[in-house]
Length: 421
Image (tube, rainbow, N blue to C red; front, side, top):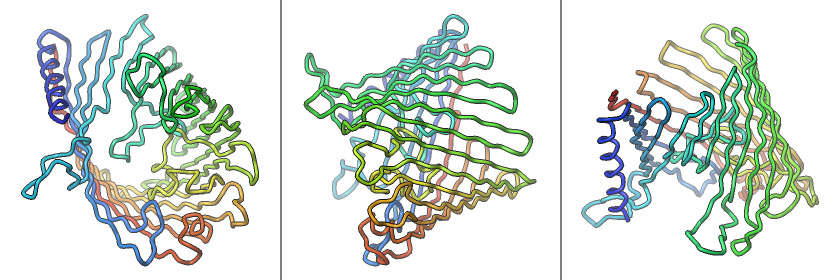
């Protein structure tokens, strides 16, 4: 299997290299992203019996963009690994991992009728505040989507229409699909730039899960939202609201919402911001699914760098989340920036007789841009849990110990080769 993957990628490289002799432009880019982490409470609370984990993760990408006036095609090969996770090895050496190498993007985009295009294949969706669809780039593998995307652009209007349908096996009959994987995701987004200060978007998205592994019934959920962004001089503010209805993955009627707001003010080298994200949760003894589904939305970037709320049903016992936060950023010079963020986490709805307060998180970060293609980031975060978080995580009130996390990440994105006709 590993050998077949290597042969396939070599064929792709050869075919692109040959085509550039007679066709428009080929650009080859790369990405090298190692990250060192110390985990002593990352994602879950530490107790006295648990020892810190130390690891090095690495993402490596090689990407090819071939384009001419009426078309573009993009292929990106990705290797994601932990140092030492090889499953092909012997006592004298390690030789690789059969699951590390993958195709993270592969699409073709055809332009027609001046303002329209059709993009087909594995691609990235990242819109507005990212609450429904995002790249989630912190994740080493990131997130990409198999879809057909129609785009229309004219006079500061952007219209995106995406359709998809997923299959697990190449069957002739009975197209069953795992119930824990999304069967389809489709959306219509309309974006308008009103002027240099104001822009807005509306989106309607349909997502579906099969009833079970042996039942082809698809439960469809609708997600609808609006996002408004305003910027004037050194002030930036935005807000969004999303609503969900239809059927959840377990077949219950869904009725949930998510509200977000953020304001930033820049004063010289310093930028300060205040924000809130409210995610509806289930009331006690309700028959409806009232917990807002984040779908493929962003987590790490907005709900604390320690990733305690990547899985909301588990992290909040379906009580939803209120995240009130303060952000600060200071530019030491043109290349070095420092940040310190504070999050106050609470349940949106009471869970049994537990107090709503979950905990507080502090995220300290440094960002260094050595060159346009070379960046270094580092950070240190701590979680200060309340009794409710301890109870939900099963460690017991007062039984958690100091929970922290630190990382250093280097990102190098070179342009390796450009050939024009």
